[in-house]
Image 1 (cartoon, one colour):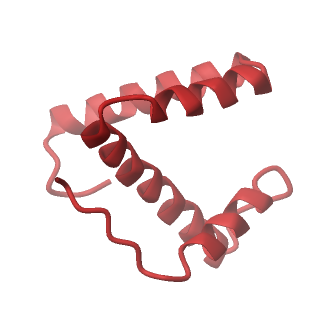
Image 2 (cartoon, helix red, strand yellow; image 1 turned 180 degrees about the vertical axis):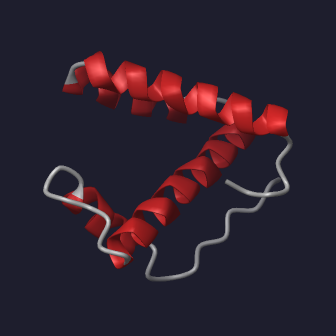
Length: 94
């Protein structure tokens, strides 16, 4: 995590990430897809910020792929992240 984050911010990030992990761990593929789609049906500024969150997720997976830190369970998504981030993507906050 970023060193510029406060302890409280780091704890909140971990809490939210854990909640997402707990949801997808017990959810059906249909529910997981529905959550992804629901995240896109929001205020446009919030959708843009969620896009930045997704870019951070993909950047982490790209790093894991380049370092060989993946196996058959997440290889496809790590490769996808590597391919998706071949070009620099900037998502402005508007």
